[in-house]
Image (cartoon, rainbow, N blue to C red; front, top):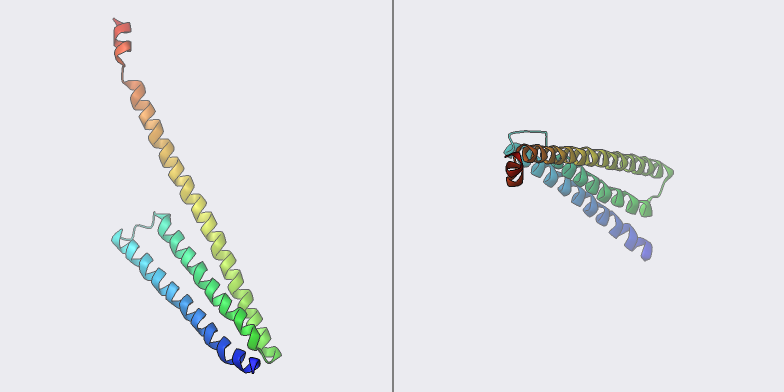
Length: 140
């Protein structure tokens, strides 16, 4: 009874999880494309790439969850080997995407900090060239 229920429900739930992963990928790809198109394909903004990478990582998590559920209904060693290789591949892809998100985020933050520091330097230089009323009195 329970075995029949599991063998009936688990594949359907796994298919739903995989479908959710596909929808996330399609939605994120369209969203990233539209953002780039609106910016006339200016690829200097790292936030679009980071958002897209995060969406890919989330989609892979759903697909990995589906593969884990499929382990409940494995009947042969060949199915186990295939499933294990898929899980390892998807886990590796997830790790690579997370590493890329991390490095892109650091690079984007560093770039923003440099722009901010440059603006502060400009303000300080502009203010140092302007004379204050007290300076004008002292120079007379």
